[in-house]
Image 1 (cartoon, rainbow, N blue to C red):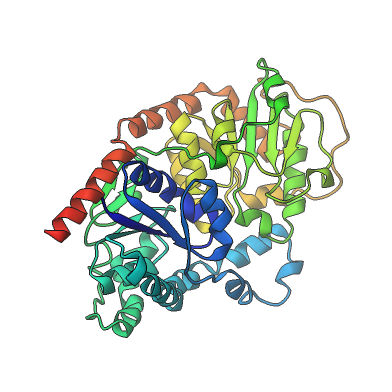
Image 2 (image 1 turned 90 degrees about the vertical axis):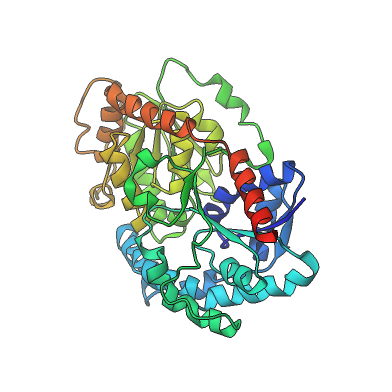
Length: 419
């Protein structure tokens, strides 16, 4: 049996793609641990995995780079400000953040002795540490839009870390993807998601933290009404003005003759918002479990969220916030899986809320009083082509080899390197 170390950035969306792989390897009998900053310990253990404290916790450092007045910006402006961090943050991931994480892994290595390092795509310290240890390394794709993380782009930045570790230069980044790259999307999702060398596609698995049940009221929801789930990941709720954004979403979804469950953000108080009877507010929910019963998903367009929906054949309405969200939303719209509501279209609607009144009938095709989100939800629910498109991609996804095949491939890689 092998010793497989998984590495992730300190964010839930980065961890999630690794979870089914680590669980499958553990169940096969391999020794498995996830190396991440201390802030990730509870979540990692919630998936039944061992946590090793290590890795560069860059969160507060990055927030300090935001311009003065950021906290006073409106939601759409703050999103654009945060989007501007994308390229500098990627370079930092390949620079001092990767070097700091690699140093932590190398301190753990004499006792832990990894045979293989599996990293989520944005975590590059695992790559440097594996190269220094002479063990293979495999990235797992964790976001959409891969032009910024090719070997040619990151190679020159990573070379500083390679030099510190006594490794030869690799300015074209040929070693970065020299084994293979794991993806949990089918090639049918888009050629742009297949550009990294040696990409192998496997079947996505929805993971459930702690396997907790849904609240008792969920069982009593009216099955005759469409069920919509709305949730926006993690970063979206941390942006200035997110409360006003959530309130606008509640207002629009409240106009529909649907039942909506809306997550207002982990740790947030749902009682801070006024909501009509057809909108149930929760702070946190097992999104993958709720989606099994849903007719439509309103999402920010994060890749994990999209995969959770595609796995279940659920069509979407996207409210993309950051650049990777916009990239993913465009791919989904192009495949007919979803409709996109630009953030500016939603947040531009200012002024007092509409007066209370009965929900507009589902299926009426009403314009929704210039309510772009409500109109998009109606359009997706009214048009069976969106559900059919989601089912089509779902079948491509289900036709992929299971995660256990990925564990086979990792075992074969270890055996080849040891041989």
